[in-house]
Structure formats: C-alpha cells, structure tokens
Image (cartoon, rainbow, N blue to C red; front, side, top):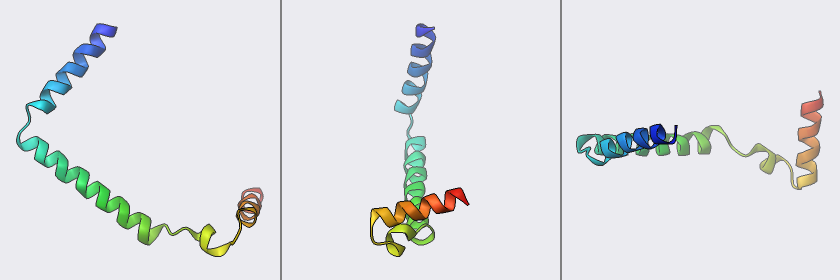
Length: 69
C-alpha cells in the first residue's frame, strides 16, 4: 500500500514538474479562483454580525436565537 501511494505521488509530481504550457494554465486558474473568492467575499458576504452588533455577547445571543427558532 505504501509503495502504491509513493508511485502515485511520483507520477503526479513528475507530470507537474515537466509541464510547460500546463503550468501557466494552472497559474491562470489559481489567479482567477483567488480573484473570484475575493470579489464574492467582499461584495456578497459582508460581515453582518460585526456591523449590526457591537459586542461578542450580542452576536452570540443573536446566533443562538436564530438557531433555536
């Protein structure tokens, strides 16, 4: 089992190491994912608990109320 895992790891490691065009494509994909995550996080998922409640106790009480409804 250990040998199989090592063989699979070496297969992928050598494949990614020998890439030329693929490496650039992976960088573009990772960059696009990072930008997409940042845009979604900033504009579509604001921190409503922090903006609507001043203390941690108020935030936790609100969450408990919402979960137990």
